[in-house]
Amino acid sequence: MERRGGSDAPDHWYSFTGFAGIGHDVAGNPIQGTPRGPNSPPPPPLWIKGRIVINEVLIRPHYDWEGNGGVTSGDEFIELHNLGPGDVFLRGWMLDDIADGGSRPYILPGDTILPGGYVAYFRSKTGLALNDDGDSVRFLTPDGYLVDEIHYLSVRAYNLSYGRLPDGSGRLAYGLWPTPRRPNRPFVESASLAIGSAPSACPSLGPGLLRFARHPALARWLSSLGLWFCRP
Image 1 (cartoon, rainbow, N blue to C red):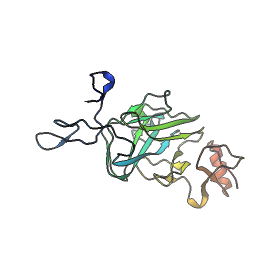
Image 2: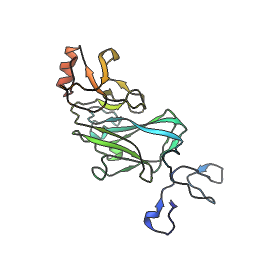
Image 3: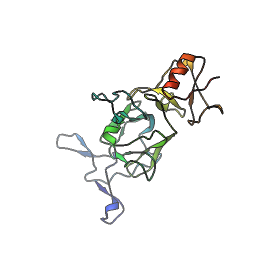
C-alpha cells in the first residue's frame, strides 16, 4: 500500500499500481513496491505500457467454459486483451458492470498480461453478474479511471458471446463462438456472416449486429435458440 495526498487518511491510501516498481528482495527478485524511493504515481490515461481493452464477454453460458466440471452461471466470463506495446501488471485494476449499481467491482489479482495476450475472468471468481436484459462491462485503473467500457442490450441465445472482431478493434459483434483466452471468431463461416448496422426490421443490438442470411435451416435453428437474425 502507498500513501498519496498528504495526511494519513483512509482515502489517501492506494494499492501499488505496478508502475515504476524498484523493489527487490535479497535474491534480487522484483517485488511489488518502491522501497527507498518515491511512491509510484497513478497511471494517467496516456501513460500505460500496454493498451488493455475488453475483448469479449459471454452473457448466457450453456457449457463448461471454465473447465471446472459443471455448467452454471459461473461460466460467464469477461476477457481482456493487451494491444501492446508493453506488458501490464493488473493487480489492483478493476472490472465492474454498470456504474453505481449492479455487482460489486472485482479487484484483479496479480496477473501480467503480455503484448498480444489474453486473460479471462469468470463469474465464479469475480461475482460479476452479466444481466440478460442488458448491462455494461467496465475496466478501470486502481484509482477508478475508466479505461474501457462496452454496452449490450437484451441477449436470449446461449453460448454466443459479444466482442471485438477482429480482436482489439473498434468493431463489436454479437454472435461469436466463445473463446476465452484465445482470438475471437464468428459462430458461422465468414461467407454466411455479415457485420453491419441492423435494418429497421431487426431489434437493435448496438454496433456490429450479426446478420445471418441465405441459410433458412440455420436461421430456424438460431431462432429456436432465441437468437435474433435478419434476412436480406
